Image 1 (cartoon, helix red, strand yellow):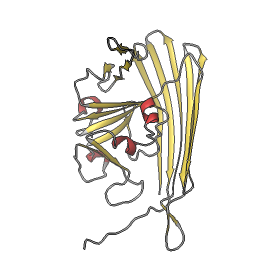
Image 2: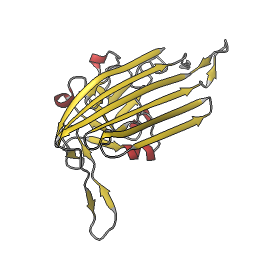
Image 3: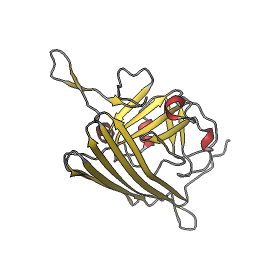
Image 4: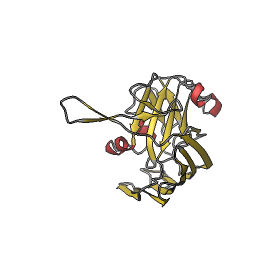
Length: 266
Protein backbone atom coordinates (compact mmCIF):
# COMPACT_ATOMS: atom_id res chain seq x y z
CA UNK A 1 0.00 0.00 0.00
CA UNK A 2 1.18 3.52 -0.76
CA UNK A 3 0.11 6.55 1.20
CA UNK A 4 1.07 10.05 0.14
CA UNK A 5 0.85 13.12 2.33
CA UNK A 6 1.75 16.55 1.02
CA UNK A 7 1.12 20.01 2.33
CA UNK A 8 1.26 23.18 0.30
CA UNK A 9 2.53 26.54 1.41
CA UNK A 10 1.36 27.70 4.81
CA UNK A 11 1.54 31.42 5.55
CA UNK A 12 1.41 32.61 9.15
CA UNK A 13 1.92 35.99 10.77
CA UNK A 14 2.83 36.41 14.41
CA UNK A 15 2.42 39.64 16.31
CA UNK A 16 5.21 39.85 18.84
CA UNK A 17 8.70 38.42 18.85
CA UNK A 18 9.71 34.79 19.19
CA UNK A 19 8.90 32.88 22.34
CA UNK A 20 11.06 33.86 25.30
CA UNK A 21 11.94 31.04 27.67
CA UNK A 22 12.26 32.21 31.25
CA UNK A 23 14.12 30.35 33.94
CA UNK A 24 13.02 30.10 37.56
CA UNK A 25 15.61 29.37 40.26
CA UNK A 26 14.72 27.72 43.53
CA UNK A 27 15.88 29.74 46.52
CA UNK A 28 19.14 28.43 47.89
CA UNK A 29 19.62 26.07 44.94
CA UNK A 30 21.64 26.24 41.74
CA UNK A 31 19.15 24.07 39.82
CA UNK A 32 17.43 25.83 36.89
CA UNK A 33 13.85 24.94 36.04
CA UNK A 34 12.86 25.63 32.45
CA UNK A 35 9.46 27.19 31.91
CA UNK A 36 7.70 25.63 28.93
CA UNK A 37 5.65 28.06 26.86
CA UNK A 38 2.68 26.53 25.00
CA UNK A 39 0.33 27.94 22.36
CA UNK A 40 -2.65 25.56 22.61
CA UNK A 41 -5.04 28.50 23.03
CA UNK A 42 -3.56 30.51 20.12
CA UNK A 43 -1.40 32.62 22.43
CA UNK A 44 1.77 32.09 24.43
CA UNK A 45 1.12 30.83 27.97
CA UNK A 46 3.12 29.07 30.63
CA UNK A 47 2.40 25.33 30.82
CA UNK A 48 2.09 25.71 34.58
CA UNK A 49 -0.61 28.40 34.33
CA UNK A 50 -2.78 27.23 31.42
CA UNK A 51 -6.23 26.10 32.74
CA UNK A 52 -6.66 23.03 30.51
CA UNK A 53 -5.32 19.46 30.65
CA UNK A 54 -2.21 19.56 28.47
CA UNK A 55 1.08 17.67 28.23
CA UNK A 56 3.98 19.33 26.40
CA UNK A 57 7.14 17.53 25.30
CA UNK A 58 10.10 19.51 23.95
CA UNK A 59 12.56 18.47 21.23
CA UNK A 60 15.27 17.84 23.85
CA UNK A 61 12.94 15.55 25.80
CA UNK A 62 12.03 13.62 22.65
CA UNK A 63 15.74 13.04 21.94
CA UNK A 64 16.61 12.12 25.53
CA UNK A 65 13.80 9.56 25.68
CA UNK A 66 14.58 8.12 22.25
CA UNK A 67 11.09 8.91 20.92
CA UNK A 68 11.00 8.74 17.12
CA UNK A 69 7.27 8.34 16.40
CA UNK A 70 3.91 9.34 17.79
CA UNK A 71 3.07 5.85 19.06
CA UNK A 72 6.12 5.90 21.37
CA UNK A 73 5.16 9.34 22.70
CA UNK A 74 1.61 8.34 23.65
CA UNK A 75 2.97 5.44 25.70
CA UNK A 76 4.42 8.09 28.04
CA UNK A 77 1.45 10.49 28.12
CA UNK A 78 -1.53 9.56 30.28
CA UNK A 79 -5.03 9.65 28.82
CA UNK A 80 -4.15 9.28 25.13
CA UNK A 81 -3.51 6.33 22.82
CA UNK A 82 -2.25 6.14 19.27
CA UNK A 83 -2.05 3.06 17.06
CA UNK A 84 -0.86 2.81 13.47
CA UNK A 85 -3.08 -0.29 13.25
CA UNK A 86 -6.67 0.82 12.76
CA UNK A 87 -9.66 -1.51 13.10
CA UNK A 88 -8.85 -4.98 11.71
CA UNK A 89 -6.45 -3.87 8.95
CA UNK A 90 -2.79 -4.59 9.85
CA UNK A 91 0.07 -2.32 8.87
CA UNK A 92 0.15 1.48 8.49
CA UNK A 93 -3.03 1.83 6.46
CA UNK A 94 -5.19 3.43 9.14
CA UNK A 95 -4.21 5.23 12.31
CA UNK A 96 -6.28 5.96 15.40
CA UNK A 97 -5.93 8.64 18.10
CA UNK A 98 -8.00 8.03 21.21
CA UNK A 99 -8.40 10.31 24.22
CA UNK A 100 -9.51 8.88 27.55
CA UNK A 101 -10.82 5.70 25.95
CA UNK A 102 -13.29 7.43 23.61
CA UNK A 103 -13.58 5.74 20.21
CA UNK A 104 -16.14 5.78 17.38
CA UNK A 105 -14.86 2.54 15.79
CA UNK A 106 -14.62 4.23 12.40
CA UNK A 107 -11.81 5.52 10.19
CA UNK A 108 -13.96 8.16 8.48
CA UNK A 109 -12.13 11.47 9.18
CA UNK A 110 -15.31 13.42 9.96
CA UNK A 111 -16.19 10.92 12.72
CA UNK A 112 -12.91 11.16 14.63
CA UNK A 113 -12.79 12.43 18.23
CA UNK A 114 -9.04 13.10 18.30
CA UNK A 115 -6.95 14.67 15.54
CA UNK A 116 -3.36 15.57 14.72
CA UNK A 117 -2.36 19.11 13.73
CA UNK A 118 0.92 20.61 12.49
CA UNK A 119 1.29 24.24 13.56
CA UNK A 120 -2.48 24.32 14.02
CA UNK A 121 -3.17 22.93 10.52
CA UNK A 122 -5.41 19.86 10.26
CA UNK A 123 -3.72 16.63 9.12
CA UNK A 124 -6.05 14.41 7.11
CA UNK A 125 -5.41 10.67 7.07
CA UNK A 126 -2.26 8.86 8.23
CA UNK A 127 0.46 10.45 10.31
CA UNK A 128 3.37 8.14 9.54
CA UNK A 129 5.17 10.39 7.03
CA UNK A 130 5.59 13.25 9.50
CA UNK A 131 8.97 12.90 11.29
CA UNK A 132 9.67 14.23 14.77
CA UNK A 133 13.16 15.50 13.88
CA UNK A 134 11.89 18.89 12.72
CA UNK A 135 9.54 19.38 15.68
CA UNK A 136 10.28 21.97 18.38
CA UNK A 137 7.50 20.87 20.72
CA UNK A 138 4.49 18.55 20.85
CA UNK A 139 1.37 19.64 22.73
CA UNK A 140 -1.15 16.96 23.71
CA UNK A 141 -4.38 18.74 24.67
CA UNK A 142 -7.07 16.65 26.36
CA UNK A 143 -10.79 17.35 26.44
CA UNK A 144 -13.02 19.17 23.90
CA UNK A 145 -10.97 21.61 21.80
CA UNK A 146 -13.46 22.67 19.10
CA UNK A 147 -13.13 26.35 20.04
CA UNK A 148 -9.41 26.36 19.20
CA UNK A 149 -8.92 23.57 16.64
CA UNK A 150 -12.34 23.01 15.06
CA UNK A 151 -14.37 19.83 14.69
CA UNK A 152 -13.06 16.28 15.24
CA UNK A 153 -11.45 17.30 18.54
CA UNK A 154 -14.19 16.41 21.05
CA UNK A 155 -11.75 14.05 22.78
CA UNK A 156 -8.65 16.19 22.30
CA UNK A 157 -5.95 17.29 19.89
CA UNK A 158 -2.25 16.71 19.28
CA UNK A 159 -0.38 19.71 17.86
CA UNK A 160 3.13 19.55 16.40
CA UNK A 161 5.03 22.85 16.68
CA UNK A 162 7.70 22.98 13.95
CA UNK A 163 11.21 24.31 14.43
CA UNK A 164 11.76 27.82 13.08
CA UNK A 165 14.72 28.78 10.90
CA UNK A 166 17.29 30.75 12.92
CA UNK A 167 17.70 34.39 11.87
CA UNK A 168 21.13 34.71 13.51
CA UNK A 169 23.19 31.52 13.27
CA UNK A 170 23.96 28.47 11.17
CA UNK A 171 22.48 25.26 12.63
CA UNK A 172 22.46 21.69 11.43
CA UNK A 173 22.27 18.07 12.51
CA UNK A 174 22.39 14.57 11.07
CA UNK A 175 21.00 11.43 12.72
CA UNK A 176 21.43 7.82 11.66
CA UNK A 177 20.06 4.60 13.12
CA UNK A 178 20.46 1.02 11.97
CA UNK A 179 19.02 -2.21 13.31
CA UNK A 180 18.40 -5.81 12.34
CA UNK A 181 15.94 -6.79 9.60
CA UNK A 182 17.61 -4.25 7.28
CA UNK A 183 16.23 -1.29 9.20
CA UNK A 184 17.75 2.14 8.65
CA UNK A 185 16.60 5.60 9.62
CA UNK A 186 18.59 8.60 8.37
CA UNK A 187 17.56 12.23 8.81
CA UNK A 188 19.16 15.64 8.64
CA UNK A 189 18.40 19.34 8.59
CA UNK A 190 20.20 22.64 8.17
CA UNK A 191 19.13 26.19 9.05
CA UNK A 192 20.95 29.29 7.88
CA UNK A 193 20.29 33.03 7.85
CA UNK A 194 20.11 34.62 4.40
CA UNK A 195 19.89 38.18 5.76
CA UNK A 196 20.84 38.34 9.43
CA UNK A 197 17.85 39.17 11.66
CA UNK A 198 15.62 39.48 8.56
CA UNK A 199 15.44 36.32 6.47
CA UNK A 200 16.36 32.65 7.05
CA UNK A 201 15.71 29.23 5.55
CA UNK A 202 15.56 25.70 6.96
CA UNK A 203 15.55 22.47 4.93
CA UNK A 204 15.56 18.83 5.98
CA UNK A 205 14.66 15.29 5.05
CA UNK A 206 14.29 11.74 6.31
CA UNK A 207 14.66 8.26 4.82
CA UNK A 208 13.29 5.30 6.77
CA UNK A 209 13.23 1.68 5.68
CA UNK A 210 12.82 -1.75 7.23
CA UNK A 211 12.96 -5.04 5.39
CA UNK A 212 10.29 -6.85 7.36
CA UNK A 213 10.51 -9.49 10.07
CA UNK A 214 8.68 -12.45 8.47
CA UNK A 215 8.42 -14.36 5.20
CA UNK A 216 5.21 -15.58 3.62
CA UNK A 217 4.80 -19.13 2.34
CA UNK A 218 5.66 -17.90 -1.18
CA UNK A 219 8.94 -16.36 0.07
CA UNK A 220 7.79 -12.74 0.04
CA UNK A 221 8.66 -10.38 2.91
CA UNK A 222 5.92 -9.35 5.37
CA UNK A 223 6.00 -6.12 7.33
CA UNK A 224 8.38 -4.20 5.05
CA UNK A 225 7.98 -0.42 5.37
CA UNK A 226 9.57 2.70 3.90
CA UNK A 227 9.03 6.43 4.36
CA UNK A 228 10.61 9.38 2.53
CA UNK A 229 9.85 12.93 3.62
CA UNK A 230 11.19 16.40 2.88
CA UNK A 231 10.44 19.80 4.35
CA UNK A 232 11.49 23.42 3.93
CA UNK A 233 10.67 26.64 5.76
CA UNK A 234 11.35 30.27 4.90
CA UNK A 235 11.10 32.78 7.74
CA UNK A 236 11.02 36.56 7.34
CA UNK A 237 10.99 39.34 9.93
CA UNK A 238 10.73 42.58 7.95
CA UNK A 239 10.13 44.72 11.04
CA UNK A 240 10.34 44.14 14.76
CA UNK A 241 7.24 42.36 16.04
CA UNK A 242 6.09 40.96 12.68
CA UNK A 243 7.09 37.54 11.32
CA UNK A 244 6.08 35.43 8.33
CA UNK A 245 6.83 31.75 7.87
CA UNK A 246 6.18 29.82 4.67
CA UNK A 247 6.44 26.02 4.96
CA UNK A 248 6.45 23.11 2.53
CA UNK A 249 6.25 19.41 3.40
CA UNK A 250 6.03 16.29 1.28
CA UNK A 251 5.95 12.72 2.54
CA UNK A 252 5.45 9.28 1.00
CA UNK A 253 4.89 5.89 2.65
CA UNK A 254 5.37 2.70 0.61
CA UNK A 255 4.77 -0.53 2.52
CA UNK A 256 4.70 -4.18 1.54
CA UNK A 257 2.11 -6.70 2.73
CA UNK A 258 1.60 -6.50 6.48
CA UNK A 259 1.90 -9.52 8.76
CA UNK A 260 -1.32 -10.75 10.27
CA UNK A 261 -2.55 -13.75 12.15
CA UNK A 262 -5.65 -15.36 13.62
CA UNK A 263 -5.90 -16.64 17.22
CA UNK A 264 -8.72 -19.15 17.80
CA UNK A 265 -11.06 -18.25 20.62
CA UNK A 266 -10.83 -21.72 22.11
